[in-house]
Image (cartoon, rainbow, N blue to C red; front, side, top):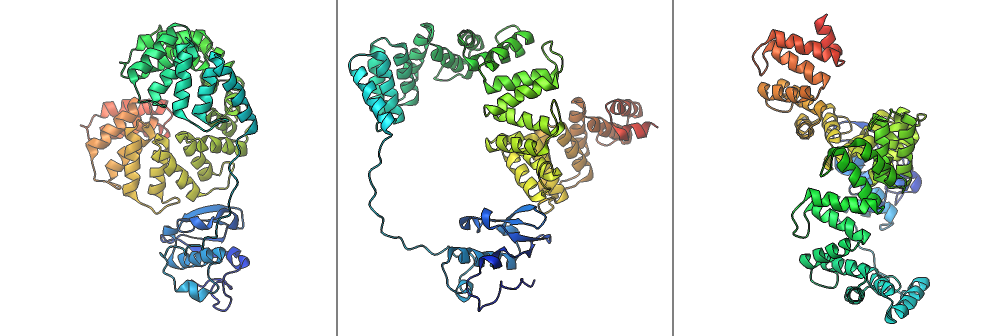
Length: 508
């Protein structure tokens, strides 16, 4: 491959910025190639040994692993790296350095003496005033001083001092002091952890009506923490007590328990009432759940796309990742609002930045289908892999399909089947169908007709039209099960009712 003018001239010295930016043909080890330019703004030098970001004239962005680039392109990146760091005056010196050699170390300049860090004067002033009141016996101030020492606000952090002030407040019968002392015993703040003392402190303050202690005690019974056995009824009792006192986290949990009938009688309308109370306090999970109720027409509510959209919008506004993801769905489909692909992508991106696996899959879908962004199979693959590693079933399925089609990555049927299987075993019916087809055809795995039949059956039980159709094929042709023409016809009719066009054609 011949490099454009300016890349290989030994008399030019270190590459110029214009030469680095110049458009060139980049070739991958799998034979794919793209004509694009090196994106100076998005390529930190320290990352050039791992990946490179490129941009084509039509605005498409590419993120390529260096290990996937051809040797000439790797060589060019090495030259770019050293040119940007300005470590070597000529290309001859760069050529003499092995590709895998670590970058030369910079000479360290003598550090200048720095002034001591100055505390936030407002925080320091607040601490001094609170400390004065605490020494005078004010128990509220004693708890605050403990928190100042724990968090290092206005004073150097000191866990032992925090413990001392919390203990002082607790001895003065301050419920807040007892609660924070119990927290010290739970987390080992300034003292060796002691689960028994922590639990007794939480229980004492909860029984005396301290709201944070009620919520914490409910969580302890719910999760079986601090050596306490899980107890659904006690957990519900304390969640209810905290919810009645107005805690939005407890109110949202009570809604879930009413919805499932966990430790309390199942009642979706009561669940909806709890959600409204928590949503009134702008609690993100409650806003999302209430939006779901309107979207699904539950708890006696009519389906109301506009109301669902509004609740998702409010949840997204307060930074709830599920709310951002749901809002992205609405904007992508025009559900309860006008379609806005660009804003849908932005909402998915925000949720993905909070490590929400399904949002990472949705970002990949946007790149794959060109929703709010130019199509980019490499970026789609990147996000599907991220979602799959975070155990999102749809992300696993789409990653498997990318490997199967060679979209954004070298084609690899064995890896495709690996991810189809993981997604299928996570319960995704569309992946169960793909896994069944792979076992029937032997694509990326050994032929296993009984195994294929079992995967099709699992998908069919979930009401997947393709699962029902392929199960009918198995019965018709005796693939992994005895031939049964009547059963096959019955399943074809069922698949057609579910919307399978292939089944409808079989019945014509």
